[in-house]
Image 1 (cartoon, rainbow, N blue to C red):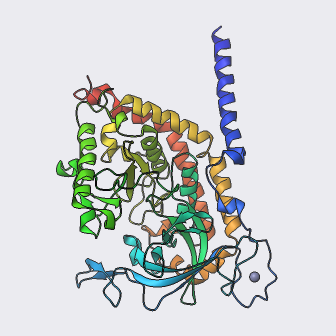
Image 2: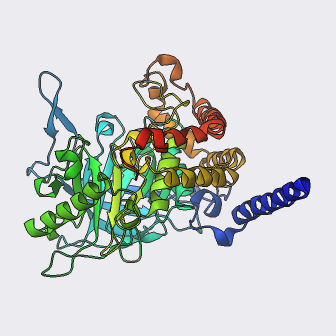
Image 3: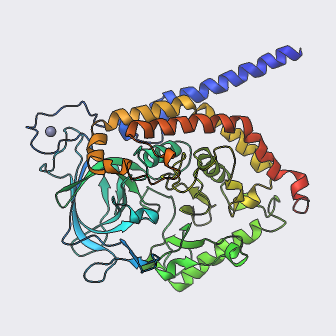
Length: 486
Ligand SMILES: [Zn+2]
């Protein structure tokens, strides 16, 4: 009898596994347009005369009248004291963008653009502002300066875009791959397209056009605009180093209690719509959540965290950042949002340092870290939260986080990028000699090595997590949390 029950269980497990695999085989199940699988391929061919750049990737041309602002300024001690501005003292520069992305042909700088617009542009990022290859924030505008929402390379219309230029990430694929894969199982992850960029006639290499984390009409995070003459609004928060626009910075409960030494700022509503009353209401709303999370009622059915957060979203955020050992997550570049009357959900951002690419030290792939982050510190006290996390991990390892899926995904991206990889490193290849990661032996010496390094990392990390995911139970065990649990 015992054996027949075992047999039935095994059969159920097999069926569940095959459903998981089937879901991945069926394109109709996908939440995402994967550019590398579905758009113009490098072997599509072209009958041009080869006298100018010819690429199967979308092409972005930017024309400016002066140097793009936003580069760091340092004092004589080397400390960062601010960012460069335009000659008129502005944070953003008015410029022009042309995007050539028609799928029916290859793309050349002289082609008729599919999108032409005035833009406001500045350099974006934190540590990446020091890199030779800049990343940019771009806002499309009308002649009169008002925002202009347009479709970008097939992505839903919006006026604001981040142009990320992979530099520290020699594989070039980290953000593209983890954003796309995460979008398959979380409500939202920024949409992305590879492209090549020419700035004032000069080729800049490979970029990733990326949605910023804000709201849009039926796109990006699903939240409502501020309701006029009230303090009712959906909102997006970022935990990082704070905003340069002082009105956006808020101080919430965990900061007062020294649980969190990072700064939290309002990402949405945007500065122009923020009133002091609205800022105060958001600050209070988030503080109320944090206060209840840090109370003895944190897990009760009447007042507990499940009323305030989308539990699945917090679990998935934890798992994807742990799987990739992306340990800024939870402290820096950490985004969450809430709609009017809704629950908090997390949004992933920035995988440049993930998969053993953190510049200063090796991030040990044989431990967990996110449980110490501000909000997870309390969530992890609940055994049910941890049990659900372990179940979800095992499910994802059969699907989007399986070695087979990930290795194939990587190979497919590399095949898609084709000779765009060589063009990128014709400009930036010198950085293979300029070791940016310590110790030196962690630096890949070629794109092939950079790709292999990610694959090796995934194999090692996945095997370790498979063996050790259960150790997360220690954080929710009664013996550790007696005073919290009734
Ligand atoms: Zn051509």
